[in-house]
Image (tube, rainbow, N blue to C red):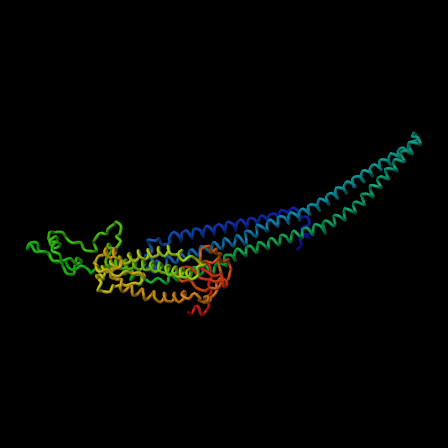
Length: 557
């Protein structure tokens, strides 16, 4: 079905219909835009909700329970879930809104051009019709004038009183009018034929062609609407697998909850270490007897003064009913029951040990860099790292003092204070450096002496452990740097620069993004990787700035 043949006389209705179609495209675009804003707002609210219920620092202990970990994992999955709704909004904006907005402008321009051509053709036909009507009226007028002239001539010719000259004049006038009527008739006939040709061309050629173009434009608009509606559904469908993974993750963490394990964790969290109180003995005040304390009582004191105070009517308060101090907690956790205090002290010691290990790793890395500078002065000034080495040494010393202080309190809790003749309960390489001083001769059983004398009873055994740990590394470092004629270090892999690095500091090397380099020494924990560009250019770059590809033999070693 063609609009050109079926709707040849519906120019105005087609103009209204096509305008309505463009308005509908803009209406649908607005609908998708509002849907996109809803998705963004929903994602924002979900993210805020997830963030609101994330564990605070004071709630970190909750992570030891499986049901708490499951909830926090659900929050993380919910955050990813929100991200997918942001993807929906982004795809709708780029694939539908922007596309339809651009297309609507194109259709408006095309529609305007087509209807301009149609209106112009319509105006030409109307102008021809007016000209035809003008010729027709002229022919009609001339015919009437010719008839009147003929009647007047006949009247004059029949009147005997009229002169022959007047009759001849009337006859000539009638002939002239007949000639004018004949000319108008010929002109009217000619223009009528021309008009019919133009009208036929207008309604069978020009208008059908224009309407055919308008029909093709409309069908294309409808097709684009269908594609947009399909994209609208596909945008949602594309994120369904990822949302499914988020929901699967929520289900898995929910199924990982272990009630038995959590109930056992309650014991670990709150176990005091005390024995239940024994029976309270009968006190016969009538016999003026001293109250004796049960051997199984929580109060282990056997002093006579406490027994006398008890006999005077001051009853003892058992552990479960002692009111907790609402003030700030002491540093040695003495406000806690023995078992909980031991766990807190041990956790504190482990944290300090980690800090010491970090400082020692930095010290080792800087020492190695200094040795490189000594061997290759052009790479940097060896003295430039001394301030940082001194700062690290001070940090290690402070952390050692702190660790020994908590070790002393832990020994008190466990009922055993380490002395010089006894090996300590816990020894750690982290507590000593290579410059450990000899142990002191006086050791007291108080934490204050430990704090003021960091090199206490632990020094002998720890020093030997430190030496056993450090000596191989020192020997290896000596082998590496003692020989001034040592050959160039072999490459152990390659790396690609992820970001540009200017390398202003001594010993570093500038790289550009995407540059390929050789790796000659991997990161030792200090955050730097040693690379080589050619035989003359090598230096350190931040490990986070490059992607390293080690050779298989280097990985095995």
